[in-house]
Length: 358
Image 1 (cartoon, rainbow, N blue to C red):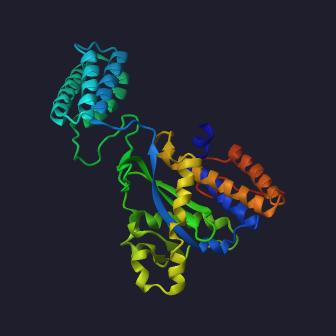
Image 2 (image 1 turned 135 degrees about the horizontal axis):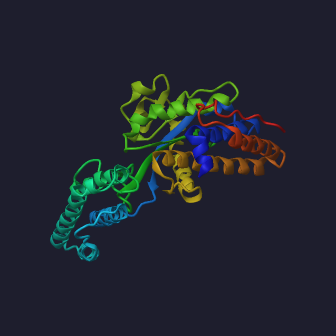
């Protein structure tokens, strides 16, 4: 945990850039290949329980009662036994699809939580200011849970992770996922990851395309010739932002009739990013993020992509023989020096400079 905090998101991005530099020095990646990329988005789920209304209300009540007692407040009633009983009843009614009874239980849970919150607010003056500060933050979040309704926007889905958003990707087996949206960019020809960013708040895919291309251009600066993205391939979810990505040539299936035969053949590799997303989730830990906060989401996504690129390099070594392994060993030595000496105060590409020694 300490090394992630010391490096920060910019330092972790240097690791991802170093894998691209190693691939270029091993001559398994030509810098010109990075001028054509494929971009897509996925959901990186947060390590939270499924956010049902009944569970959130009970967790908020028990959390506030525990904090109030720890701060020295004597509550008239904690509703401990009734809260647990209501939680069990709500689960049974939901399983049996008895929704009228379920709504009555939820109404009672909101009443109980509101009584506890109002009593804590009345008695806050009895304790010191230092003990009031943490209670104020949890009171605000508990009131959000108490007042939010199923159709509301920007709901709170976890007390310990307020940054979590509800994202629907149209999956039949999983209509809703709870986490952050992650954008990926890979090379068109070989599928090496050249950019990964996490975006909080479930933004529209097209609105984050320019930011993803900007990050990719920054990470490619260390390659020979400093290649810049000239062509990007996406799915139809990115439509409507042609002016934002100009002068980059942007191709998707909606423009099929306006593309020449060569461009249409290139567009057929758009879906090559889908299995890479699957490997990131299944083999490299992107399916569930256990790191805290918005920064934890961003760092975790880049670390997963770095791990994928390392395996990509190992497969390249297997194809080409053992000689390129010396490049990776030199890169690992430089990376270790970077992790122990870089400063978090410097921006991207200034926090650590990798000197390869072979």
